[in-house]
Amino acid sequence: MLRKTVLLSLSALLCGGGVMAQDAYVKGCEKLKADLAKLGDKCPEETAEAAKISCKGKEEMNAATKTFRKCADKMAGAASSGKAVKEWKCRAVDPADGKPFAEATAARIMDCGKALDAKVKEARCAAGAAKVEFLRQMEAAGSWTKGTKSSLACQ
Image (tube, rainbow, N blue to C red; front, side, top):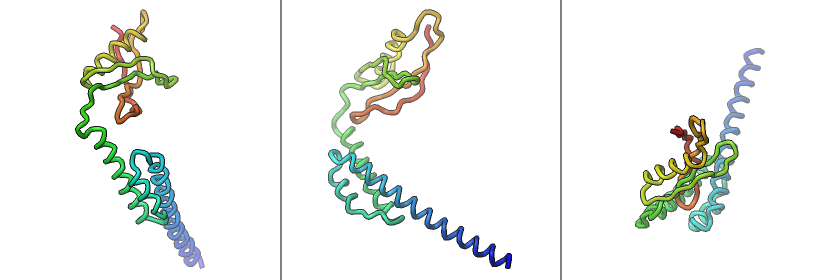
């Protein structure tokens, strides 16, 4: 009797796990389709292709992933193909409130970082401050990156 109960419990657990995995595929597929819909103006063909996908399981999730990658590749190609960046933009954001407090532009990315460092020192290095902590963000393909944690000595 105990063996039968354990076997029934185990089979229910295994079958339930398959349902949970299937739900994850469906949710992931729907999320990719929603994200593609937001990018409709930049990837109209991919958005139309994604709209035809009915999210039922793993195969549809894979199809949605491929479609999303096509859009991402297209956007990355547009950002870097033949259109050389004439001016890099970078900014410093206060991690406490998320507001930018210094911004710089330069022809080269490294020069932008150096110019930003100078502006951060100017904006935040008060008398006696040892260092400034901030998020360093770069503009890429028309939007700002999440940023990297940075600190700068005030000397």
